Image (cartoon, rainbow, N blue to C red; front, side):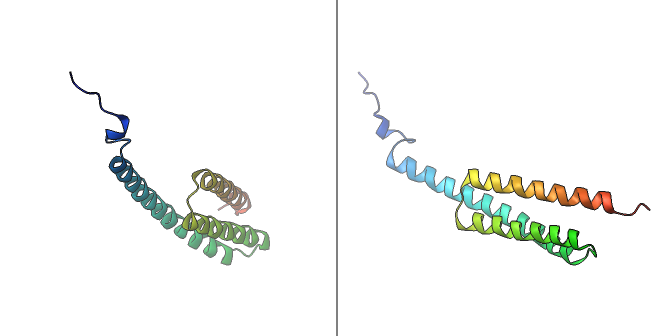
Length: 111
């Protein structure tokens, strides 16, 4: 008769399997964080450039707000990775960007 494996003996639930799983999650999380931070860094630069260029103080203020919020999201991601919080922050940032870009499109002179 063959003995059945205990759950603690399996690769998934055993100590070694769990350590391997955690390492994989940590590596994946670090890779994802790095990609998000790289993207947000380029977005921050774009927002800062846009905050300097418009002559309209309302647009300048809106882009400054986008830049500040982008920096806040970057700090949050760099400090700790809470997927739900990051998703909420990114949704808010996306809404800010859409609002600023919509106002830019409606206020640009037609050519």
